[in-house]
Image 1: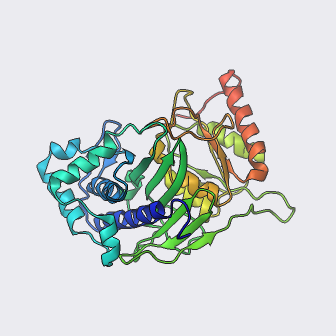
Image 2: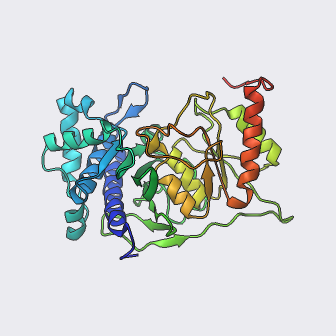
Image 3: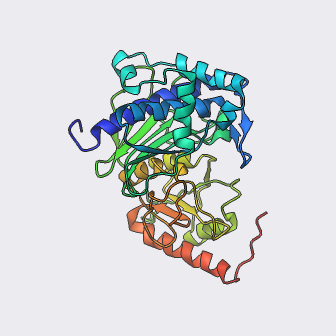
Length: 365
Protein backbone atom coordinates (compact mmCIF):
# COMPACT_ATOMS: atom_id res chain seq x y z
CA UNK A 1 0.00 0.00 0.00
CA UNK A 2 3.08 2.23 0.28
CA UNK A 3 2.82 3.49 -3.31
CA UNK A 4 -0.97 3.44 -3.67
CA UNK A 5 -3.04 6.59 -4.17
CA UNK A 6 -3.73 8.34 -0.87
CA UNK A 7 -1.05 6.33 0.98
CA UNK A 8 0.47 9.50 2.43
CA UNK A 9 -2.95 10.83 3.43
CA UNK A 10 -3.69 7.54 5.17
CA UNK A 11 -0.41 7.59 7.10
CA UNK A 12 -0.92 11.16 8.30
CA UNK A 13 -4.54 10.54 9.24
CA UNK A 14 -3.65 7.37 11.17
CA UNK A 15 -0.91 9.11 13.15
CA UNK A 16 -3.17 12.09 13.85
CA UNK A 17 -6.01 9.88 15.06
CA UNK A 18 -3.62 7.86 17.22
CA UNK A 19 -2.20 10.99 18.87
CA UNK A 20 -5.67 12.49 19.37
CA UNK A 21 -6.92 9.21 20.83
CA UNK A 22 -4.08 9.24 23.37
CA UNK A 23 -5.15 12.75 24.40
CA UNK A 24 -8.69 11.54 25.03
CA UNK A 25 -7.45 8.57 27.06
CA UNK A 26 -5.35 10.91 29.16
CA UNK A 27 -8.45 12.92 30.00
CA UNK A 28 -10.42 9.79 30.88
CA UNK A 29 -8.14 9.36 33.88
CA UNK A 30 -9.17 12.77 35.24
CA UNK A 31 -12.31 13.23 37.29
CA UNK A 32 -13.00 16.77 36.03
CA UNK A 33 -13.08 16.64 32.25
CA UNK A 34 -13.92 20.33 31.97
CA UNK A 35 -17.24 19.82 30.23
CA UNK A 36 -19.22 22.82 29.01
CA UNK A 37 -22.43 22.99 26.99
CA UNK A 38 -23.04 23.73 23.32
CA UNK A 39 -26.16 25.26 21.82
CA UNK A 40 -27.56 21.77 21.16
CA UNK A 41 -27.05 20.86 24.87
CA UNK A 42 -24.44 18.18 24.16
CA UNK A 43 -21.40 18.20 26.47
CA UNK A 44 -18.08 19.47 25.19
CA UNK A 45 -14.85 18.61 26.94
CA UNK A 46 -11.26 19.72 27.03
CA UNK A 47 -10.50 16.52 25.17
CA UNK A 48 -12.84 17.55 22.33
CA UNK A 49 -10.94 20.77 21.74
CA UNK A 50 -7.52 19.17 22.17
CA UNK A 51 -8.37 16.32 19.82
CA UNK A 52 -9.59 18.67 17.08
CA UNK A 53 -6.46 20.81 17.39
CA UNK A 54 -4.23 17.75 17.01
CA UNK A 55 -6.14 16.34 14.03
CA UNK A 56 -6.23 19.57 12.03
CA UNK A 57 -2.67 20.58 12.91
CA UNK A 58 -1.25 17.29 11.63
CA UNK A 59 -3.24 17.33 8.40
CA UNK A 60 -2.68 21.02 7.66
CA UNK A 61 1.08 20.60 8.17
CA UNK A 62 1.18 17.93 5.45
CA UNK A 63 -1.61 19.17 3.15
CA UNK A 64 -1.77 22.96 3.61
CA UNK A 65 -4.21 23.57 0.73
CA UNK A 66 -6.91 21.24 2.02
CA UNK A 67 -10.11 22.43 3.70
CA UNK A 68 -11.73 21.22 6.93
CA UNK A 69 -15.14 20.59 8.44
CA UNK A 70 -15.06 19.90 12.19
CA UNK A 71 -17.55 19.84 15.00
CA UNK A 72 -15.97 22.30 17.45
CA UNK A 73 -15.11 26.01 17.29
CA UNK A 74 -12.78 27.82 19.68
CA UNK A 75 -15.31 30.45 20.80
CA UNK A 76 -15.79 28.87 24.25
CA UNK A 77 -12.01 28.82 24.73
CA UNK A 78 -11.59 32.44 23.69
CA UNK A 79 -14.22 33.38 26.28
CA UNK A 80 -12.60 31.30 29.02
CA UNK A 81 -8.80 31.75 29.23
CA UNK A 82 -8.50 29.21 32.06
CA UNK A 83 -10.21 26.56 29.96
CA UNK A 84 -8.03 27.47 26.98
CA UNK A 85 -4.93 27.05 29.13
CA UNK A 86 -6.05 23.58 30.18
CA UNK A 87 -6.56 22.56 26.56
CA UNK A 88 -3.17 23.98 25.57
CA UNK A 89 -1.47 22.14 28.42
CA UNK A 90 -2.96 18.87 27.18
CA UNK A 91 -2.07 19.50 23.52
CA UNK A 92 1.47 20.67 24.22
CA UNK A 93 2.42 17.82 26.56
CA UNK A 94 0.97 14.80 24.74
CA UNK A 95 3.44 13.15 22.37
CA UNK A 96 4.04 9.91 20.54
CA UNK A 97 7.16 8.06 21.67
CA UNK A 98 8.58 8.03 18.15
CA UNK A 99 10.51 11.00 16.76
CA UNK A 100 9.65 10.39 13.11
CA UNK A 101 5.94 10.10 13.88
CA UNK A 102 6.00 13.26 16.00
CA UNK A 103 7.57 15.21 13.13
CA UNK A 104 4.75 14.11 10.85
CA UNK A 105 1.91 15.11 13.18
CA UNK A 106 3.39 18.57 13.97
CA UNK A 107 1.46 19.93 16.95
CA UNK A 108 0.56 23.66 17.28
CA UNK A 109 3.43 25.84 18.49
CA UNK A 110 1.41 28.25 20.64
CA UNK A 111 -1.95 28.65 22.34
CA UNK A 112 -3.10 31.25 19.80
CA UNK A 113 -2.15 28.99 16.90
CA UNK A 114 -4.09 26.18 18.57
CA UNK A 115 -7.23 28.33 18.77
CA UNK A 116 -6.91 29.32 15.11
CA UNK A 117 -6.46 25.69 14.12
CA UNK A 118 -9.57 24.61 16.03
CA UNK A 119 -11.55 27.32 14.24
CA UNK A 120 -10.48 25.98 10.84
CA UNK A 121 -12.81 23.08 11.54
CA UNK A 122 -15.55 24.72 13.56
CA UNK A 123 -15.93 27.59 11.10
CA UNK A 124 -15.38 25.44 8.04
CA UNK A 125 -18.28 24.95 5.66
CA UNK A 126 -16.38 22.60 3.38
CA UNK A 127 -15.24 23.36 -0.12
CA UNK A 128 -17.87 21.85 -2.38
CA UNK A 129 -16.10 19.32 -4.57
CA UNK A 130 -12.51 20.12 -3.56
CA UNK A 131 -10.43 18.17 -1.05
CA UNK A 132 -11.94 18.49 2.42
CA UNK A 133 -11.19 16.68 5.67
CA UNK A 134 -14.29 15.99 7.76
CA UNK A 135 -13.55 15.16 11.37
CA UNK A 136 -15.13 14.49 14.73
CA UNK A 137 -12.69 14.97 17.62
CA UNK A 138 -14.87 12.87 19.92
CA UNK A 139 -17.96 11.18 18.55
CA UNK A 140 -20.13 10.29 21.51
CA UNK A 141 -18.99 12.91 24.01
CA UNK A 142 -21.75 11.92 26.45
CA UNK A 143 -20.57 8.31 26.49
CA UNK A 144 -16.93 9.45 26.65
CA UNK A 145 -17.67 11.33 29.87
CA UNK A 146 -19.13 8.10 31.29
CA UNK A 147 -16.08 6.07 30.25
CA UNK A 148 -18.00 4.16 27.59
CA UNK A 149 -17.51 3.71 23.84
CA UNK A 150 -16.60 6.73 21.74
CA UNK A 151 -14.55 7.47 18.62
CA UNK A 152 -12.06 9.87 17.05
CA UNK A 153 -12.71 10.08 13.33
CA UNK A 154 -11.37 11.75 10.20
CA UNK A 155 -12.14 11.31 6.51
CA UNK A 156 -10.76 12.84 3.34
CA UNK A 157 -13.52 13.78 0.91
CA UNK A 158 -12.91 14.73 -2.72
CA UNK A 159 -15.68 15.62 -5.16
CA UNK A 160 -18.22 14.65 -2.50
CA UNK A 161 -16.87 11.11 -2.09
CA UNK A 162 -14.90 9.65 0.81
CA UNK A 163 -11.41 8.61 -0.27
CA UNK A 164 -9.74 7.90 3.09
CA UNK A 165 -11.35 7.04 6.42
CA UNK A 166 -9.68 6.54 9.79
CA UNK A 167 -11.52 5.98 13.08
CA UNK A 168 -9.94 5.42 16.47
CA UNK A 169 -11.86 3.55 19.17
CA UNK A 170 -9.80 4.17 22.32
CA UNK A 171 -12.03 2.04 24.58
CA UNK A 172 -12.42 -0.97 22.28
CA UNK A 173 -10.29 -4.09 22.81
CA UNK A 174 -8.32 -5.26 19.78
CA UNK A 175 -9.75 -8.79 20.01
CA UNK A 176 -13.33 -7.71 20.71
CA UNK A 177 -15.98 -9.56 18.74
CA UNK A 178 -18.81 -7.65 20.44
CA UNK A 179 -18.99 -3.87 20.87
CA UNK A 180 -20.62 -3.00 24.19
CA UNK A 181 -20.76 0.30 26.06
CA UNK A 182 -19.31 -1.17 29.24
CA UNK A 183 -16.75 -3.60 27.78
CA UNK A 184 -13.81 -1.21 27.83
CA UNK A 185 -10.07 -1.44 27.14
CA UNK A 186 -8.84 0.19 30.35
CA UNK A 187 -5.19 -0.81 30.05
CA UNK A 188 -4.45 -0.04 26.40
CA UNK A 189 -5.30 2.62 23.82
CA UNK A 190 -7.92 0.72 21.86
CA UNK A 191 -8.06 0.03 18.13
CA UNK A 192 -8.02 1.89 14.85
CA UNK A 193 -10.01 1.02 11.73
CA UNK A 194 -8.85 2.55 8.45
CA UNK A 195 -9.59 2.36 4.75
CA UNK A 196 -8.68 3.78 1.37
CA UNK A 197 -11.52 3.52 -1.14
CA UNK A 198 -11.13 0.37 -3.18
CA UNK A 199 -8.43 -1.14 -0.97
CA UNK A 200 -10.29 -2.75 1.92
CA UNK A 201 -10.48 -2.13 5.65
CA UNK A 202 -7.66 -2.65 8.13
CA UNK A 203 -7.50 -2.91 11.93
CA UNK A 204 -4.55 -2.18 14.21
CA UNK A 205 -3.98 -1.61 17.92
CA UNK A 206 -3.18 1.96 18.97
CA UNK A 207 -0.21 2.85 21.14
CA UNK A 208 2.12 5.73 22.01
CA UNK A 209 4.70 4.34 19.58
CA UNK A 210 4.81 4.37 15.78
CA UNK A 211 1.87 2.85 13.92
CA UNK A 212 1.50 -0.85 14.67
CA UNK A 213 1.05 -3.46 11.89
CA UNK A 214 -2.50 -3.66 10.52
CA UNK A 215 -4.56 -6.71 9.61
CA UNK A 216 -7.23 -6.77 6.92
CA UNK A 217 -10.84 -7.14 8.01
CA UNK A 218 -13.04 -9.56 6.08
CA UNK A 219 -16.78 -9.63 6.72
CA UNK A 220 -19.31 -12.21 5.56
CA UNK A 221 -23.01 -12.47 6.30
CA UNK A 222 -23.63 -14.81 9.24
CA UNK A 223 -26.38 -17.38 8.70
CA UNK A 224 -28.46 -19.65 10.92
CA UNK A 225 -28.47 -23.46 10.76
CA UNK A 226 -31.32 -23.23 8.25
CA UNK A 227 -29.31 -20.98 5.95
CA UNK A 228 -31.27 -17.82 6.72
CA UNK A 229 -29.39 -14.59 7.47
CA UNK A 230 -28.66 -14.32 11.20
CA UNK A 231 -29.44 -10.64 11.59
CA UNK A 232 -28.13 -8.44 14.41
CA UNK A 233 -28.97 -4.72 14.52
CA UNK A 234 -26.83 -1.82 15.73
CA UNK A 235 -29.10 0.82 17.28
CA UNK A 236 -29.30 4.07 19.25
CA UNK A 237 -32.24 3.38 21.52
CA UNK A 238 -32.00 6.80 23.22
CA UNK A 239 -31.63 8.91 20.08
CA UNK A 240 -34.24 11.70 19.95
CA UNK A 241 -33.96 11.92 16.16
CA UNK A 242 -34.72 8.33 15.16
CA UNK A 243 -38.15 6.66 15.03
CA UNK A 244 -37.61 3.61 17.21
CA UNK A 245 -41.18 2.37 16.70
CA UNK A 246 -40.53 2.02 12.97
CA UNK A 247 -37.18 0.37 13.64
CA UNK A 248 -38.93 -2.19 15.82
CA UNK A 249 -41.40 -2.95 13.05
CA UNK A 250 -38.52 -3.44 10.59
CA UNK A 251 -36.88 -5.93 12.94
CA UNK A 252 -40.16 -7.77 13.51
CA UNK A 253 -40.87 -8.04 9.79
CA UNK A 254 -37.36 -9.41 9.21
CA UNK A 255 -37.85 -12.00 11.95
CA UNK A 256 -34.93 -10.73 14.02
CA UNK A 257 -34.63 -12.56 17.35
CA UNK A 258 -31.23 -11.37 18.55
CA UNK A 259 -31.16 -8.37 20.93
CA UNK A 260 -29.99 -5.09 19.46
CA UNK A 261 -26.55 -3.66 20.19
CA UNK A 262 -27.36 -0.30 21.74
CA UNK A 263 -24.60 2.31 21.31
CA UNK A 264 -24.76 6.10 21.65
CA UNK A 265 -21.82 7.01 19.39
CA UNK A 266 -22.66 6.86 15.69
CA UNK A 267 -19.10 5.91 14.79
CA UNK A 268 -19.18 3.13 17.41
CA UNK A 269 -22.12 1.61 15.57
CA UNK A 270 -19.95 1.37 12.46
CA UNK A 271 -17.40 -0.51 14.58
CA UNK A 272 -20.18 -2.86 15.66
CA UNK A 273 -20.93 -3.53 11.98
CA UNK A 274 -17.27 -4.07 11.08
CA UNK A 275 -15.85 -6.01 14.04
CA UNK A 276 -18.65 -6.33 16.59
CA UNK A 277 -20.96 -8.99 15.19
CA UNK A 278 -23.73 -6.69 13.92
CA UNK A 279 -24.79 -6.79 10.28
CA UNK A 280 -27.71 -4.36 9.91
CA UNK A 281 -28.23 -0.70 10.74
CA UNK A 282 -31.34 1.24 9.75
CA UNK A 283 -31.86 4.94 10.47
CA UNK A 284 -35.39 6.24 9.87
CA UNK A 285 -35.64 9.82 11.15
CA UNK A 286 -38.73 11.03 12.98
CA UNK A 287 -38.77 14.19 10.86
CA UNK A 288 -38.47 14.25 7.06
CA UNK A 289 -36.47 17.46 7.49
CA UNK A 290 -33.76 15.86 9.60
CA UNK A 291 -30.29 15.67 8.08
CA UNK A 292 -27.31 14.07 9.81
CA UNK A 293 -24.08 15.93 10.47
CA UNK A 294 -21.38 14.84 8.06
CA UNK A 295 -18.83 14.19 10.82
CA UNK A 296 -21.09 11.63 12.52
CA UNK A 297 -20.68 9.31 9.53
CA UNK A 298 -17.52 10.31 7.64
CA UNK A 299 -14.76 7.77 8.09
CA UNK A 300 -16.84 5.05 9.70
CA UNK A 301 -19.08 4.76 6.67
CA UNK A 302 -16.12 4.19 4.33
CA UNK A 303 -14.54 1.71 6.74
CA UNK A 304 -17.81 -0.22 6.76
CA UNK A 305 -18.18 -0.21 2.97
CA UNK A 306 -14.60 -1.37 2.45
CA UNK A 307 -15.12 -4.24 4.91
CA UNK A 308 -17.81 -5.66 2.63
CA UNK A 309 -20.91 -3.71 3.59
CA UNK A 310 -23.33 -1.71 1.47
CA UNK A 311 -24.90 1.54 2.61
CA UNK A 312 -27.37 3.96 1.02
CA UNK A 313 -29.91 6.51 2.15
CA UNK A 314 -33.62 5.64 2.27
CA UNK A 315 -33.93 6.51 -1.42
CA UNK A 316 -31.24 3.98 -2.28
CA UNK A 317 -28.76 6.73 -3.15
CA UNK A 318 -25.08 7.01 -2.16
CA UNK A 319 -24.07 9.70 0.31
CA UNK A 320 -22.84 13.08 -0.89
CA UNK A 321 -20.22 14.59 1.42
CA UNK A 322 -19.74 17.68 -0.72
CA UNK A 323 -22.55 19.71 0.83
CA UNK A 324 -20.73 21.11 3.86
CA UNK A 325 -21.60 20.36 7.47
CA UNK A 326 -24.61 18.11 6.90
CA UNK A 327 -25.53 15.29 4.55
CA UNK A 328 -28.04 17.63 2.96
CA UNK A 329 -28.87 15.37 0.00
CA UNK A 330 -29.57 12.24 2.04
CA UNK A 331 -32.40 11.18 4.37
CA UNK A 332 -31.84 8.25 6.72
CA UNK A 333 -29.79 5.18 5.87
CA UNK A 334 -29.75 1.42 5.42
CA UNK A 335 -26.50 -0.46 6.01
CA UNK A 336 -26.13 -4.21 5.59
CA UNK A 337 -24.57 -6.82 3.31
CA UNK A 338 -25.12 -6.40 -0.45
CA UNK A 339 -27.07 -9.66 -0.81
CA UNK A 340 -29.87 -8.49 1.51
CA UNK A 341 -29.60 -4.71 1.16
CA UNK A 342 -32.45 -4.35 -1.33
CA UNK A 343 -34.74 -6.40 0.92
CA UNK A 344 -34.01 -4.33 4.03
CA UNK A 345 -34.18 -1.06 2.07
CA UNK A 346 -37.52 -1.98 0.51
CA UNK A 347 -38.95 -2.89 3.89
CA UNK A 348 -37.70 0.31 5.55
CA UNK A 349 -39.18 2.39 2.72
CA UNK A 350 -42.50 0.56 2.94
CA UNK A 351 -42.82 0.99 6.70
CA UNK A 352 -41.78 4.64 6.62
CA UNK A 353 -44.20 5.24 3.74
CA UNK A 354 -47.08 3.81 5.76
CA UNK A 355 -46.33 6.29 8.56
CA UNK A 356 -46.05 9.22 6.15
CA UNK A 357 -49.44 8.26 4.71
CA UNK A 358 -50.95 8.14 8.20
CA UNK A 359 -51.29 4.37 8.46
CA UNK A 360 -49.20 3.95 11.62
CA UNK A 361 -49.29 5.46 15.07
CA UNK A 362 -46.05 6.71 16.60
CA UNK A 363 -46.08 5.51 20.20
CA UNK A 364 -42.58 6.75 20.98
CA UNK A 365 -42.08 9.69 23.30
